[in-house]
Image (cartoon, rainbow, N blue to C red; front, side, top):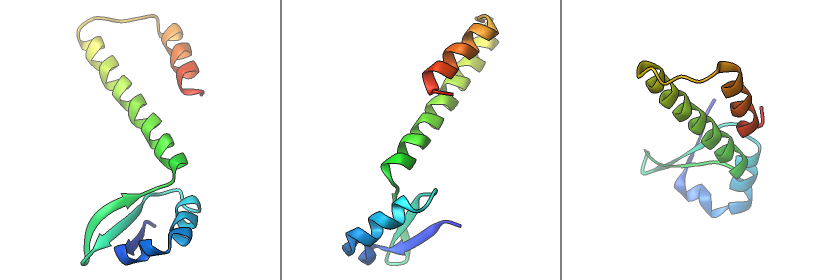
Length: 86
């Protein structure tokens, strides 16, 4: 379940940092009862950024398939695994 905290709680930086590192989801910050910011650990950010990059590469690949630009599947899979450390 996502964590939602008011912006005033950001004053206690140590507790907010600990919360970020103890959760696997972003923390949503509210201001005057409305969503304002999202906060997460660097580790979670990097994981999500890699996932987004992978999704973008898949979208590019799907477009290339539509255009008839294809590669050997085994070679491409090996390159992708190396690139993302899979």
